[in-house]
Amino acid sequence: MTTHTLRRWGAVLMTGGLLLTAAYLIYPSSAHDALIRPAAALGLAGVLLALPALIAFQLAQSARARVTGWIGAGLLVLGIAALEIPHLVLGLFDPSALYDLDSYHSSFFGAMEFYGVVALAIGMIVLAVATWRSGFYPRLACWLLVVNVVVSGLGASVPAVADAVRVPAPSYLLMALLGLTMRQAAAHPRAVSSAPVESTTIPAL
Image (cartoon, rainbow, N blue to C red; front, side):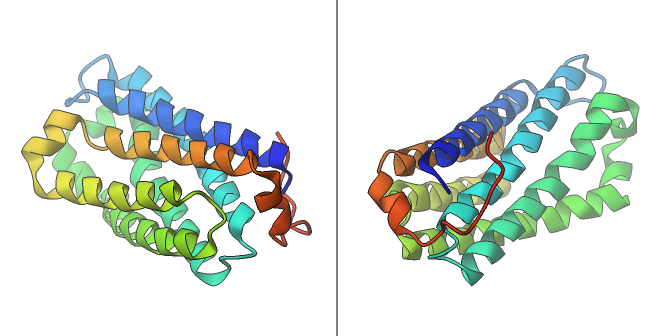
């Protein structure tokens, strides 16, 4: 992967993370609220940007983090997709489907969210280990993933904290900062070019 491509994908991840952060800062507590459509639109746009950018994050370090890196990135991407896409799509196109949250959470989509949370948590931990061991990105990248796990766990176990900081907004802000580490890695061409990833291709933006 060229430094230019890595820098571009870093910007995409930053943008996706910031859009998701903004979405959850304004996301209403009730689907009856008129804000649900614009919030869901922002969130959906953020997800569609963040998912391929997370794949690019792993692809850049894949020569140094093959198995664990792809397992972590794969679980993280699948977790975010399962957790976010169903309710964001419904919030944008059919908010009435979210009026009864008990029914929603007992539905197939609700089950997807549960498994998405599990996959996301495991994925972040595995990817953090792989990122630390690869040494491709600044150490900050690993710590951002670790802090994300802690923040997510704290929000899940202490509802008052979750409400105060608008969880998962902080988690997606940390993800946006992960994009910054991609751009930092691209600023050191020797580190990027020394990794044997020249044969790996990724769409340039």
